[in-house]
Amino acid sequence: MELEKGGLELLREAVMELKKGFPGLSWEDTDIFPDRLRPVLMEVAGRLQDNYPYFHPLYAGQMIKPPHPIAHLSYMLAMWINPNNHALDGGRASSHMEKEAVAEIARMFGWDVHLGHLCGGGTMANMEALWVSGALNPGKLIVASQQAHYTHERISRVLKLPYRAIPVDSKARMDLSVLEDVLKEGNVGTVVATIGTTATGSVDPLEDILSLKEKYHFRVHADAAYGGYFVLAGNMAEETKKAYSHLGEVDSIAIDPHKHGLQPYGCGCILFRDPAVGRLYKHDSPYTYFSSKELHLGEISLECSRAGASAVALWATQRLLPLIPGGEFAKYMEKCRYAALGLYEKLSSDSRFSIAFPPELDIVVWAPRAGSVSEMSKLSSRFFKKAAEKNLHLALATLPVKFFESALGGVEHDSETLTCLRSCLMKPVHLEWVEKIYGILDRTMEEL
Image (cartoon, rainbow, N blue to C red):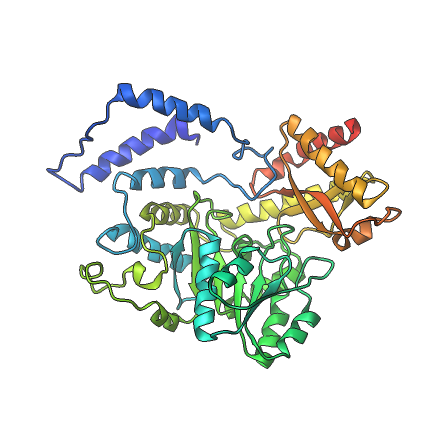
């Protein structure tokens, strides 16, 4: 359903229904006149044209996915109330919807008992996880892979916790032998396992990390901001599937509904397996939490004011598309993975391209071949611009050459890094567009 055709009329009907809950109260706006609104709104529409077409399958660059129509409509509907989910006074219905939606996310990982809430995004979710880890293991080291998101190091500095990056193997996954050497030093408080790196979509070997936890006793935080929802996909490689099967054994999980969860931005989620960590959030507020003895979400969150509309949109999306294996949402995830595999197969069979290892999730990384690594990097940048002229929008990434070792026969290794092309095929419709995308890549390479 295109939003502008049927959705806005449906929204008008829903707003009329919402107003019935407040009989006798005026909903009239003040100081707003259509003749003044229109020119400003039209100017906004014009300014927003200066964007890439993030909504379209020919945008296959960064991790940007359009919200589902139900999320659009539910978010806009909630904005008539503009709830604040910090305290029940500010968002009574939306707070309950948040608790229900977060509980459904937790059940994806097998957690019927948990502590969790929504937040502004993956950075905030990871920050809360590391803040809890620092409180439970004060002064101890935070470690993550060199391909983990850069915010982990930044967050550790903010929290004044020591941080160390662990090298990765040729598939961008944490090197366990180096990790164990660091663990032997006896000062590691938390290991961050990345479940879907932002560069390549690689998944750290979680089962082995958990085995090391039994020996060295540290917390495990799973940064599944990007890859968390793939736990529902039934078409993962066996090695990747094994990592996902152990997600329920970690201490905390970050996941971003505004990535694969079909939500507008400003919707992350942090989950803790042990609800007892809620004691660390305890604080006094002389005016906030007196309206109800129920849990106010601000009592288990570092953030204060938060958009209740995010919770409403997420709840509605999960109501329409339940988070269950084999369900419609799970099939969306499987289509993204199939799309990445399809593009990988086409590129790997084309001698004009050098492609990294097979995708674990839905991210494909490759580069046009040339005589040397440095020449390939320059060619990648030219390719990026040339493809954009054909309305195919990719992304550039600079990665270690070892990720491409098996595909660089005969290429001079004059650099340790390679600037390559990267595609996030994270829209289910990408599966239907693989042929067309490859066709544009083919023509672009011919022109270059």
